[in-house]
Image (cartoon, rainbow, N blue to C red; front, side, top):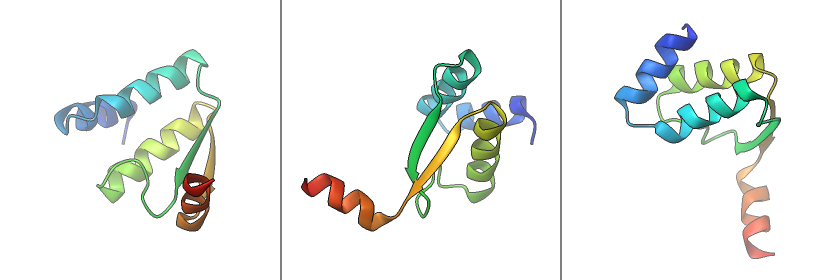
Length: 76
């Protein structure tokens, strides 16, 4: 998927927040992103993989945490 195809798919799904993450990465304002691997960023697995790859290509370090790590942070 090209960047334009990814952005168009995100727009069609109403995922402006993800588009903003990509824009921030392009400007160098997003250096790392922490996310739960089992959840990802979007529900569509192919689109999710494309978005994550694009973010990595833009220099964003992806930090995957487990569901357990997220639960521990919420209780602290």
